[in-house]
Image (cartoon, rainbow, N blue to C red; front, side, top):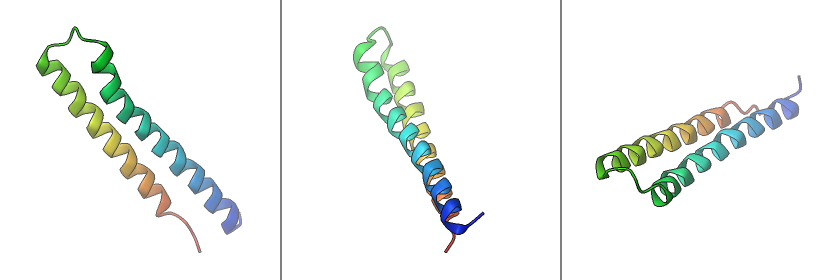
Length: 70
């Protein structure tokens, strides 16, 4: 496989993981805003887990970009 094809596949995979990160980040703030039956502790835990997931997915996207070839 040529380097150009490989690099495009890597960029597409990184874009996918980055988009999942953005979706997780949006859900962190939208779900507690519309679903108000949670206690304060449950909301804090869901925000913490969501932020951790968003950061982890963003780091995964960055890791994929490090696989680019010259």
